[in-house]
Amino acid sequence: MRKLQLVPLLLLMLITACKDKTETTSSKKNVETIKNKKMNNVKYKTENVNGVKIAYREAGDSNNPTIVLLHGFPSSSHQYRKVLNQLSNEYYLIAPDYPGFGNSDFPSQKEYEYTFDNIAKTINSFLEQKSITNYAIMIQDYGAPIGFRIATANPDRITAIINQNGNAYEEGLGEAWKTTKEFWANRNETTENALLPSFSLEGLEWQYTHGTRNSENINPDTWHLDYLRLSRQNAHTVNLDLFYDYQNNIKLYPKWQQYLRDNQPPLLIVWGKNDAFFPESGAEAFKKDVKNIDYNIYNTGHFALEEDADKIIPKMRSFLHSLKK
Image 1 (cartoon, one colour):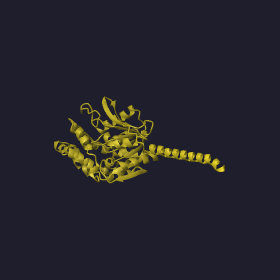
Image 2 (cartoon, helix red, strand yellow):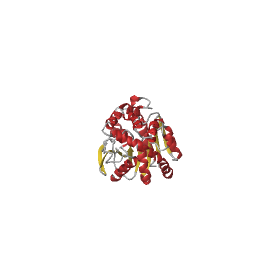
Image 3 (cartoon, rainbow, N blue to C red):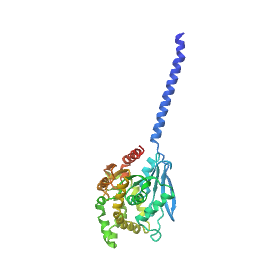
Image 4 (cartoon, rainbow, N blue to C red):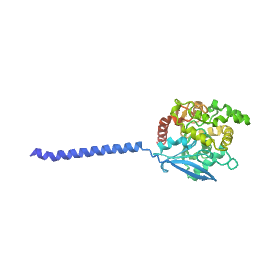
């Protein structure tokens, strides 16, 4: 009789144990799903800024902390495709194409002044039109002079700087600038022609693959896409104008360095050390002016995200998490 009384109790205990195990397993799966979730909800939009259509990529929830991704030469917002896909589950990401780049309008030189001052003004107006007034910036190559202009004009808006080979120091100008410096000293047909290989398919491939551990790690779509855009009528002339104007960025280096000293923005360095344009000495120089740097150097080239996104993006996430503490 006593054994019969125990049977319902044992059955109840077994059912309860199975239920608890199922709920625990389900809970763990839910946590893992959230942890590994990638929103992948990139949208491709445009915004009219003073008559110029600015194309941009947008991902994530606008209620989350914002990161503005500022691309380099000869690329576009396309260079941040991996960041947009992988960080959109926690951050609101905006990646604009500059006028003349990517899918933005390419107005003539009569309609638009191709200088870094003017591009920065356009991108700042774009952010203001979007009501984006509190954000981190990620900078690379041309993204540095554009980003630092925006930051020095609006220091209270910048929450952090993520720097992937974005220079702000003379010691960060590598050997690859030799021909450009000759062009600055004397702009003429000879010095212009010396720079034209930069726009060739081979020259663009070199920019993406030089300094990488294995060129087969780099997606060739990158330089073929850039070549297509640089093959448009008047594209070489416009980009030569920007090459020539780049010397004015160097004149602003002291101002940008003062901004860093005065404001001490949280700074993440994720730098490809084999960059012929901006070698590791450019990354090292930031230590003079910023007290607390999350400093990371990678054995790759100018476009470090192409080869080392699997290392850089988790580092970005942990850096941004640290700002919340």
